[in-house]
Length: 248
Image (cartoon, rainbow, N blue to C red):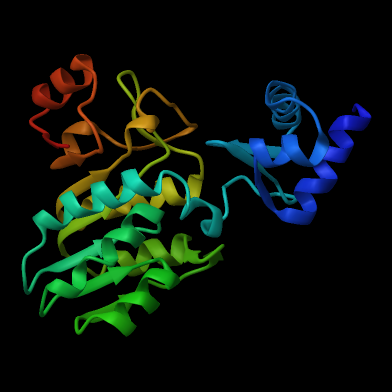
């Protein structure tokens, strides 16, 4: 590892997350040099690049921490959440997954009454409990970051029937559909399909074309896809072929 890359890692460890422009200022190198170093460090499993910056991965950490994800593509997530709230009606039984987009959707639910809202995300549950008058239920199990995701969580999910479940993913492709990075989260979504009348996929447009190791579900199992802009024609045709509503 180059001395410059060692210094880059040291700075990231101290700050947790920095943008490329911040790193360039700290280190007095060009942004293009920083990008090349980050790419090499990511290939070695030492950092994770995210849009406009990077963070250091802790041992055994394979997912971006929730505190970081909440600030990535925030404008797009707020737009998606606003559209998704159009599917919600008073007195429904709904589920919000552990995603940052579902967490933002939760902030739109104070406008509704008599909802029975279940979630695996503790931060989402706390917000809903403090800021809405709806009934909030936390689906328990072993914790990962700020959410529960385990076999116990899956068993607890099976005790419910949801009118609508909102879920996100890490990638969506023509060839492999909806995919995720974390196996336990993907398995949880398999269970969610069984206990949901309607499944709404919340996916920002930069995830289109990405593929991760674990398949969440078939496209035909989804009721609607909510995204931040009109997808390429090849995706629109796929949604139409599978009778999936597309909202953007």
